[in-house]
Structure formats: structure tokens, C-alpha cells
Amino acid sequence: MKLSYSGKAITGMLTVVPAHERKFVDEMANFNFSPKRSIKLAEVMGYDRHRIVAGAVTSSDLAVAGLEHLFAGGKLQREEIDALVVVTQTPDHLMPGTSKVVHGRLGLHHDVFCIDLNQGCAGFIIGIMQAFMLLDQPTIRKVVLVNVDVMSRKVSPRDRNSYPLIGDAASVTILECDAGAPAIEARLKMDGARREALMIPAGGLRRPSDATTAEMVEDEEGNFRALDNLKMDGSAVFNFVLTEVPELIRGLLAETNTDVADIDSFLFHQPNRFMLQKLADKLGVPYDRMPSNVVEHFGNSSGVTIPVATTSNLSARLVEERLRVCLAGFGAGLTWGAMLLELGPLNFCEMIEYQEDNQNG
Image 1: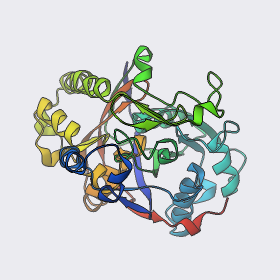
Image 2: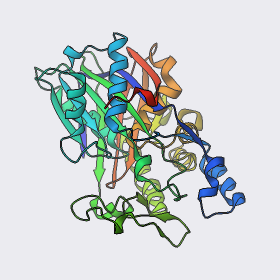
Image 3: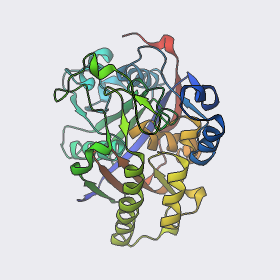
């Protein structure tokens, strides 16, 4: 699918990461794997440490903390929010949606349009698309896009395929109409036939959680997980990314008469350093223009990794400069998408830490 937008822009970006940090070397004993092989895996994949919530922190907790920070700093006013889009795979409840939880906890006015999107690693791209469509309405002038996941609560600590790389985080992105903004081009593809490559088998109505879905079972690779936990077919996901994503990016660049050299930064979803470097090699992108350091410092927070890559690598530049960037997200669905746009100067571009004592239900 091809999508084009005009007269719209991102004007601010904030990320929220838990203060609680775990190191890979401290977790190796949980995995049915020799220390030597674990260290080798960490070197190849870029594991080092990750930020995960401690205790019963929910998605709305991280989202509210980020928005309250913006309110307190005068960077956003409650009354100027016209729409709230929350993208998450870890909602507070099956019903109501987390956007309504955030709306109520913040005391927003009754004319705010609230919507939840159940999207994963491509969720930042899809959230921007939804926000831009809302901005086509004359009564909507400012959209707040929240991407948030606390996936650590759904991953088995004894699953070395997933747990070392997983992270929790939230982002708050402000999108507004801007008559002078350059055109934005996006591409999006989905393949539900391959949905089982990344899934949580139990917990929905197809397979409700019960005592049996909580039982830990060892797989053929020595990982222990339950049906209530995230299950990833690593080989299938790796092949999907390296086959589908470069083709999509090349097509987007060709159709917009853009060369790799014209892009200041390729801000891609952050599955791990190894996969990102393989993508950079396939596309002919220098490593210094495709950040791949998020997993080693923060972990893979699903759809939040693009904002984390942005605020942790480019915050100083983006409050001063306008950069030509290519965004790309790929993962659960299976879904893959990309967007070519000019980003900056932003009103704010920063990262804050969430302290557990911030939790207020």
C-alpha cells in the first residue's frame, strides 16, 4: 500500500524508559545455555543491558508519566489535545482501551478523540499514519501519539531467544498540521498468513488463560516458556526481515527519486544489532547512519524503538536542525512499513526515566 501526506509534521518527541535496569551477565544463569555460548551470543546480537519495569507497572503508567512530564514543563497543554492515539500490545485491560484509561487519569476534556491500535514493531509507523488521517479533520489540530509496551511482563525469563533483548518503554509524539511541511511518502505491507512467527498463543478468547497455559515447557532449543508467554520463531523472523524490508525500502527510495546518500539517518525498528547491520549491508547504508545501539542499552521495546533510537541518538540535532530521515518498522502481524520525511527542528526531543514510585494507578 502506498500512502502520501502533505501539510503535516511531527513537532515533538519524548521517550520514557524504566529506571530499573538488568544486565545480561546477571541473567545468564536463567538460560539453559553454557556461559561461554551466552557471552558469544551477547557479542553477536548486541546484548548488554535492558530497561524493564519492576512490579505491576502497566502501559498507562508509562504513558501518563510521559504526558505529565510534558504538562509540567509547559511543552504541552491538556486543553490543546484534540486526539489521543495509543498503540500497544500490552493494554491495561481487555476493555476499556488504554487510550480511555490515559484520558481519564489525565482528566482530558470530553471532545478528545481516543483510539487504541493493537500493533507491534511497525506500530510507530502505523500510529503516525492514523494521526495524519485524523489531522485531515478541520476540528483536529493536534494529535498525541503514544506508543507503549511492557512486554517484559509477557516474556519468559528463561527464554534466551526473547528475554535478553526485550525492553519496556513509552513514547509521546506530537503531530500537527503545518502548511509548509514537505510531502511525506509511506509504504505498508502485511501478511497475516505468517502471523504465528511472533505471537502470544494464550490469553485471548481463542485460547483463554488457565492453569495449563501458565505451565512452563521446554522447547527443542532448551528454552522454557508457557503459552501465556511471547513465542518468537527467530529464524522465520530473521528471514522475513532480510527478505521483505530491503525490497520495500528500495522501492520507496526509487519511487521518490531518493538516493541512500540523500538520507541523513535511517531510523529503523531495533530488533538487535546483528539484524540491523545486515539490513544496512543489504541497503548500502553506512553503519553510522543507521543507529543499532538501542537493544544493548535499553532493549527492544517493540513499536517504541524508533522513538528511542531517535531521542537517544539525535536529540541535540533535532531540536536545531531539519533532517531527512527514513523510518522503518517490521514485526508482528507480520507487518512491515517505511516512511520518508523531513524531521525537525522539534519543539522537544528528549528521554526521561520512569521511577517505580511514580506509579499512581
